Each structure stands twice: as C-alpha cells, then as structure tokens.
Image 1 (cartoon, helix red, strand yellow):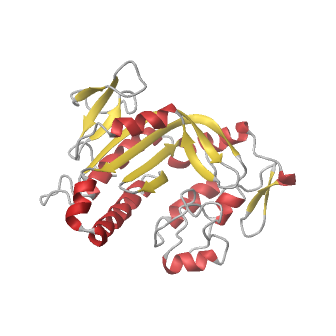
Image 2: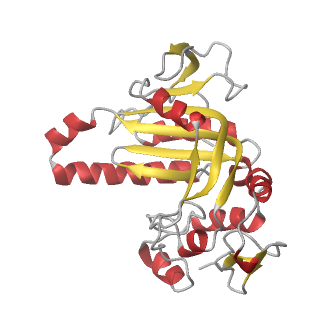
Length: 285
C-alpha cells in the first residue's frame, strides 16, 4: 500500500504539521479567509496527491475532502494512521475534520446535482432490500465517476448526489470537469449503452461564487453554500431522465447547436438559460 500523503497543509506559516501529516493551527488560531482563498484557488500539493492516491484504494465510504477510504482492508490500515471517521462528522476523516480550522472563502465553483428519477415508485415495486441494493450500486457508480474528475462529493443522501469542483482541488478546468463528470455519471448508470439505463437519473451543473470551507462547531462539515448551489439544486429538478442541464456560461466549448431550455426557478424572477446534454455529448475522460 502506498504511503499515506498529508491531507492538507505542510510547512505553512500559521499551521503545524507533525511527521505523520496531521495538521493544526499554530496557537489554536483559525485559518484566515485570504489563506482559505489561496488554498481553494491555487491548491495544495499534498491534498491533490492524497486524493489521487486514495481514490484507487477500496472502498467506500470515503472522506469527502481527501477521499481516504473508510471501508475495506485499506480503510482499516489507514484508520490506524489517524484516517478514521471523525466523531464530529463521519463523512470526514479525523485529520481533515478535527485538524482543519474553521472558516472558508467565497470562490468560484462548479456544482453538480444528480437525482434518481421515479424513486418512490421504484421503491414500492422493488421492496426495501432490493431498493437499498440499487441505491448502493448508484452510490458506487456516482463515487467512481465523480472522483475520476476530482470532485468533492458533498452529499450522498437518499436518491441524490451533490458534488462541487473548485480550482485548487479539481484543477484549472474545474468547470469543464463538472460537465464531464455529469456526462460520465449518466453513462455510468447505462445511458448510451445498448441495454439502456439500469436506473433513471437527471442531473444539472451550475457555476459561480459560493462560500466553501469548514462550516459548523460541534458538527463540522466541509461544504459549499450559497445561491450558486441552490440554483444547481433547482435546475436538477427540471432535468428529465437521461438529461444533464448545464447553466449557460459554465462551459464555453460546448457545440453551438446544443439544445437550450429556459428554466423558471423558484426565487428567481428571470429564467435561467440552460444547455441540454445527454450521454451522446462529449466523451468520457
């Protein structure tokens, strides 16, 4: 098994890092908004390295910041090195949650929401056990597709997944990667395949400024908040099964003849222009 990389910071003026990679704020002080901004937009090599290593180690669930696996043999081994689920938030490892200082910054992000279509009727037909197995299959497919594009998987709740992409984690083409991840997710559940999808799925991507950081006190969460996130969630509600709706301006390199749709969203007086993509667009990276 490869050596576990440091999660976030090293040799930073206001951070302490021990030999094993655990982090903390020097003197117990927080991490300033300016430094959060630099981290989220310029990135940090140990975090990027950690995510690229951990995503190949089985198995889910994972820390949504560094992608450290909590399950399987790798999870048991890494838990001994301090990468176990945090008691503050089991979706984050102890290193990323307990040592990561409070705060965040407003930065440009791309946000993806995807939701299983017809899940209520599907649950009634399939029965609880079979429906749970189907959702677990969906979670696995979504996790693999999203991590391939260096997404931060924010939530896997019920029949929905939310992820966001930020330059410092997902790279300079983070907006385009969000679109590619959405298309790959459609293909991952069978759209475009000869046998068709094994579960109905609609998705949407929006981009803009959001607050990204470590939110909360007793219960801490690394997340993205703001109108950009809310719009993506509401756009997703307008996507038919097999569709990826992409807000106008998110990706400039989409074909000029891509179908468009005007979306009337709650809380917005003016319609949102969206491009309508399907699994036939682009190619999986």
